[in-house]
Length: 408
Image (cartoon, rainbow, N blue to C red; front, top):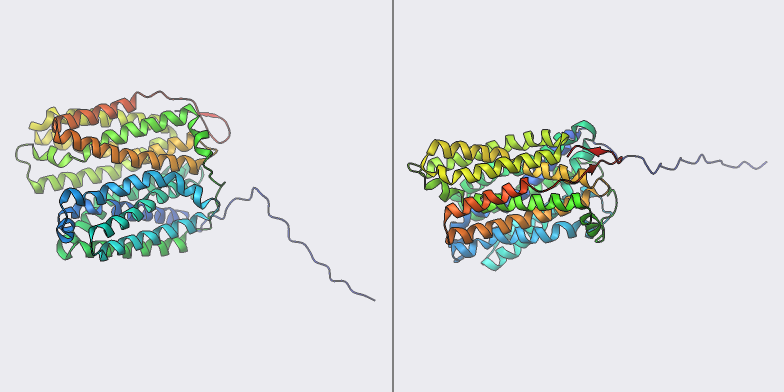
């Protein structure tokens, strides 16, 4: 008698089986916030270290400023290209690799013997910025789906606001006490820790569909996506045209010394953190309406700062409202674009990151031209008008993933 071994076949996985969820989804979302914190702190750290960095490498402050401009321009290009390059790679692996690259870029900066080496390192920072923004922006809703998706997205973007409030000031203080190289070395350690934590805390996050270059023209053919990107470009360009020169704007107010300016900017950052979560709560229900409200408030505040220069209390109050409004820009813009393109959320995030970073560079450049020419009043008027124009862009009907029209 011949006995045949029978095998019970394992059932084939269903194609619609959801990706594994982490045991602690909010911890995973918190680590995504840590990733945005690390990349934005690295991006903006040279702002507080320009003088010492320039002196240490024997270049002028203006030349040292390229360490701030270059990453933004590179990020604008790489944000849409990186999702295409990584295609179906697990997004956990991609994020860990980007944080390791960020650590290498910071270490290269800390050890740089000459300024061209710093610029090479900052180019790598731009790649990391574009990649982290494009990949991480939409993951909060995947990790915590449903009604809490808006809060999860807000938490991911809170890393940007916390970087402004804590990361950059802490790095500046460390640089003043121990040297600019030590500040960048500290960010090397921060990026390594975040990379390790992401590897442990995040679940596997397979791509929801390979992003191809042809996806972007298809998205841009949709009027709702085009107008949202125009809104974001106007709003962010106007903000950075004015905010890049907010220190000299405040310093022209009688009785406002360096200590008070620092306190006011800290208050601005704290208000930005609050605005991030307030904007996220509103954007979860009405993303387009949230963005329009933010643009209206921000435009009005920046325009009012021009005649308020003679009053310290009025200028301080306007600055806090400015921070509260701008804190909601990132999360509201991300939510609005995701709602406008539910069929391609990662491609929409990549477009958002590219336009956002290009607008940062354009706004800072325009503000500089105006500050050196007509003066600070022209800077504020231009920034306020651009933000106000963002509030006037038309809205197109937005449909959710099931095809139902949602409130704009």
